[in-house]
Amino acid sequence: MNRFPHLVSQQDSRPREFKIGNLLQFIEVANALGESFVFRGQKLDWELLPSIARDIGRSGFLNNEQEMYWEFRNHAIPFNTANAATMWQWLALAQHSGLPTRLLDWCINPLVALWFAVKEPPQTEKHPQEEPSPQQCGHGVVWALHVDKSEVVFDSENAPDPFGIEKTHIYYPEHVSANITGQTGVFTAHGRTESDDTEFLPFESEPNADIILSKIRIPNSAFWHIRYQLANININYATVFPGLVGIANRIRYMNQFSPDEPTDILFPSDTQTS
Image (cartoon, rainbow, N blue to C red; front, side, top):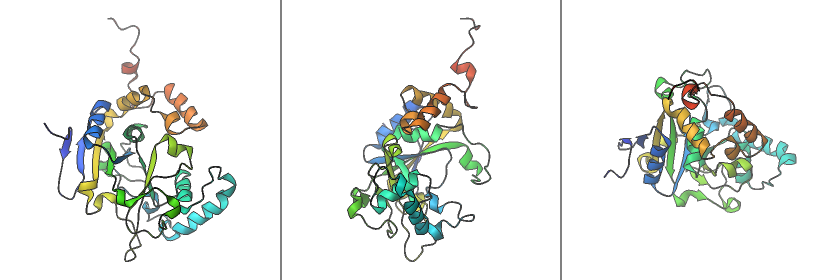
């Protein structure tokens, strides 16, 4: 029996690829991968790049990374209710507040990552700022990353300077945001070498990508049903984004059809004959 169900591609120097069509198949793949994995859901098949490294043709993020961090930190002091103290803690708080950083969000719980991939109707057309290719538009993805314990940051007080790292580190953060708790959040902190500090290398292009990464593809047609299945097991806006905004969005979802949801299937007409 194949150890990896729903495997569609396995090539040297490239991440394994799976394709699933429902929640049960996703759970089968996640179980087959085993322990020591974290997961990231995306509605499109984007490169694994932190937000600081995206849209570099239109932004000055890379050149002003530390200046942006310190400006956020200086202005955010009155709102630091979680008492973030270390550079890593402040970087996590900035990331979850929307500031472009070198952190990339992952989840310990694979079902939360799956929810992020399917929580909205699939994007089938190009967006002016994102400009996905036709290959990126046909499916969402959940990435699975094998955790290398030698590159993990647990104690941010004794961790290296996040702006000075060359290798990618995995940061299990102190919960300086309720969203980190709701999302079982983990970060990858991406490094740049001194010889090339102009850009970040996409994670899936690193030499050992075929060992540490797997990609689970979800066709657009499956989004609505998986979203519905996740809601039935209490994976929703309110649990992923604890607080008033999450509660409001959960209520909104429960009382409004998304454009990709077939109303005749979810709520058949009472006039149909048995």
